[in-house]
Length: 106
Image 1 (cartoon, rainbow, N blue to C red):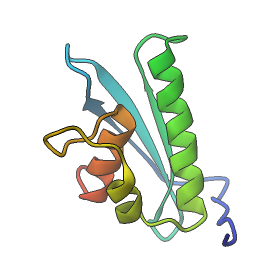
Image 2: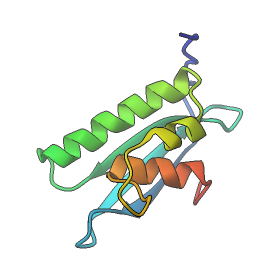
Image 3: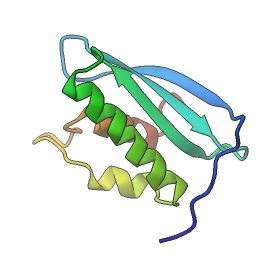
């Protein structure tokens, strides 16, 4: 395993919303960047606090952030997520990863 690249204490951030799961369920996604513009952290929140899906989204964002900080490529992560029978992501975490991998709204 490689070295973990620490994020600066003060960093650029960007927030956007993504819809996933039908019924117009929206999630807020906040991205944190290194000084060179590389993505280093992801936060996902949405739904009602205490819901299982909310906890899974938060935990998935933590794992995604750690993978990025240890040098995993977003394209490799995107190719490994679970997909539905049409090739779309099966979870909100996957939807966020796909959006980031294709460079949308960053």
